[in-house]
Length: 90
Image 1 (cartoon, one colour):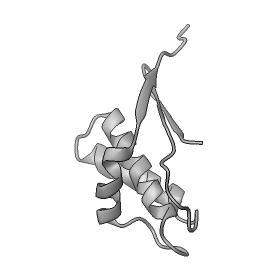
Image 2: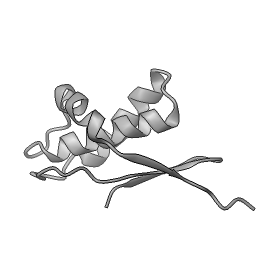
Image 3: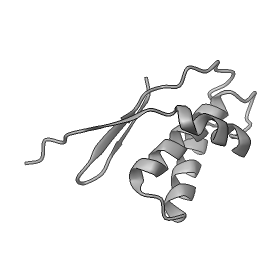
């Protein structure tokens, strides 16, 4: 169904990629790893979220307990669609 990223001031939704899922094992770990690596490299949250979604999608394409492969993440990255939406702050 995609993914959400919410910060104190912004929120984004990523649409799921049209890929063939082989195994969901490792998708969450790859998502977190992609997000952390991108943030540690100085990427803003929206770009880090894009990397995280690509990493999780790449992991889903891998058999068994494999995590994502860098070449798959780079290939999927341009296909990740992110949209920002307004937060109702009180």
